[in-house]
Amino acid sequence: MKKKSLFGILLILCLVFAASCDPFPSLKYEGDHKELYSAAIYAIPGCGEVYDAQVKVLETDSYGRTLFEFAAKGSCLFGRSGKQVDALMIVQESYESGAGYYRDVCYSFTNDAVDEDISRRINELKALNDWEKPLNEERTVYRQTTEAPIGNFGDAFRSVPNAYKSLSSGITASMSSFEVYDSNKTGKKIVLWCTQETDDKETYTYYIQFVQVKDGELTEPHQLIAKSLDELQTKIIKGREAFGWSYDLVVQGKWGSFTTERTESFDGKYYALQRKLESNVKVTVYSSASDAEVFSFVPARARDFYGICWESDSYNTWVQSGDTGVFRYQFQNGEWAKTESAERPADIVSKYDD
Image (cartoon, rainbow, N blue to C red):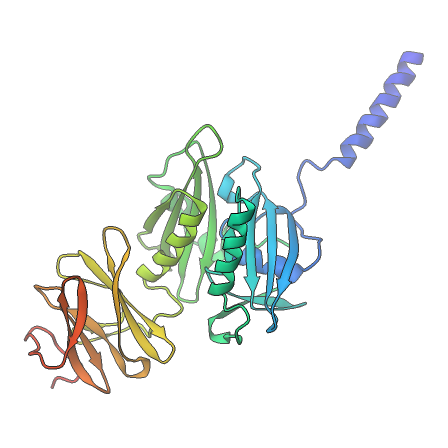
């Protein structure tokens, strides 16, 4: 009889203990500053579906920006290892209903960083996010406040047959996670694959794929590979620009031989991107082999700019402007310099040609 009573007590205790333990942690965020949490899960890659999130405000500036720490578990950056993602983030504005931030440069991963490194990252983050400068609404992306994760699979991909299979083709590893990191109105998506390739649960490889949904089908993905969290952030920024999706690029188009899209030299050694720089346009030339910046120049006002083109047998470039006409930047000793008078090759066609 005593044994049965003891067994009954143990059973009740086990049931009570089991009820108090949640094997499936709640994904709902119940802490303070829900608007900052919401901005973080949208802005920081790999955080679309996290749990045990924490937000700690560190500092504010005179214009309403907020610098805060963000930490969470369950990020697809670390597969199923349970490792916590740690990051610093700055929002430009924040209200109870939402917050705004600069895309791609508003966060900095701090996993395993020491105090001196964190101090450096804070200073770099402030510089990139215009700390103590007037707000720039044109650069700011706004997100509404949410208490729930935004999820890893976007609606556009749920409607595309075999999307998961298509994106995972050619990627083999012991552990992998998938997330639609970002998207825009044109149907372009940044897809983040986070793959653990070693047994030490400390070394990860990140596959970033840029794809577009067209007529219910996925375009061929452009894939970049990163070996660290810092490299991941850099590759997302460069990839967004390189594949024609950047928020400071000039209006995309082609006029005759000229284009404002990414364009390569005749042999593919260099490629050029054109961005807005206040009221002007800045042309930046990169090495195709390393994606490193080689040279840059500011040739025209943004409102008059109609693209550039390369000569078919040299690294000389031509600029098309509605104000100053068509003119050449001549390549010499690794730099490009404007030449006031140059004869345009016959195969380069301007929008102003009859």
